[in-house]
Length: 60
Image 1 (cartoon, rainbow, N blue to C red):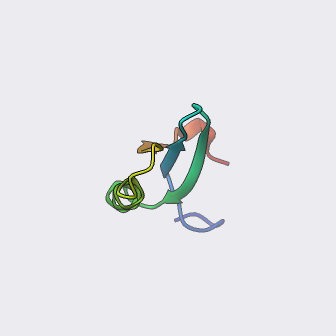
Image 2 (image 1 turned 120 degrees about the vertical axis):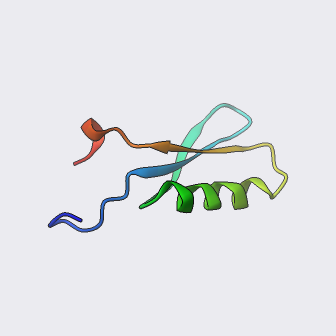
Image 3 (image 1 turned 135 degrees about the horizontal axis):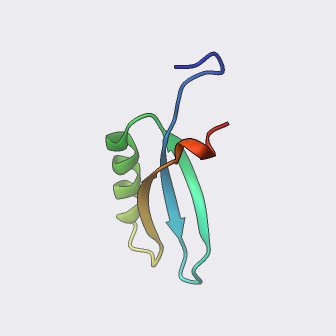
């Protein structure tokens, strides 16, 4: 944790069928983020969901 709050380095990313990418959310652990991505991916749409760790240089 930092003075500004919890560190949330794990991102869930969504890519739609046009190739547009969006950040769905930020999470404290890789496992938590993966559970969200897996749950969203079960809906059967053509979007892709995956987990990425935010780089240290991207943090505020």
